[in-house]
Image (cartoon, rainbow, N blue to C red; front, side):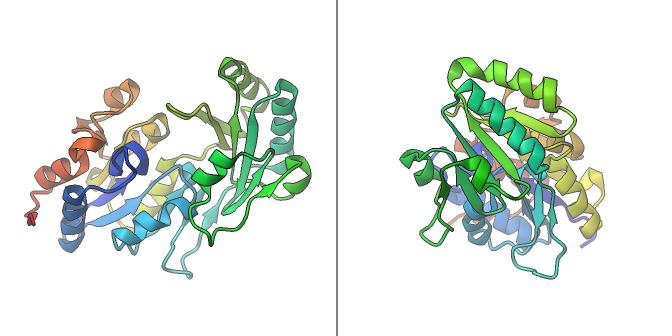
Length: 276
């Protein structure tokens, strides 16, 4: 196909409605785009285990970006070279120590799909344990149990600790890590290896499919989408996106509750979407 585009979809607040489902209208439009030869990928901050259901729901056969770029892999092609970029364990342990000194609420570390949790938290486990088949959490002394370089660390600080903790990360670990604050309702600081972001993964996928930048369409809503929206030739902010992303994006569409992705793709790619 001469004019095929690469379409990159963030999940939360973008492809997914607030109820964490893909609306039928958006799904139909994305499937039509695929039928017409366009390539669709998921680029998310989520781990593999909590994004794979959406991947299969859309019938994707493409690489996927997880952990905001710290993991790039191909769920349906084991011969595809996965790229896993975890942070050094020494840095992770130093961060864990600083968090314990501050007495944060909890710390969660992930090595791809293995999850380490400092303190038992039923609500957190419920959210993270996507299916009964997921490996069980390792709960307890996280500094002892975590023996490998982690893909990501999530810190759950108290509200008044967020700024202090982010300043500490900047002052002491800036050369090794990136950190971001999750939006409401979470007080979560997510930490991954320096230089990792969704654009890094998307660039590799675009190269793999030989798609030029001006034919990359990317959708997002949060600060972990900034680099990807900036990199894509057609960077699209959702109507519910943060102000910084809207400022950076070349286009703004409707919200995730108003089929923003579907509306934009149908118009931009002149798709003939059949309505049921």
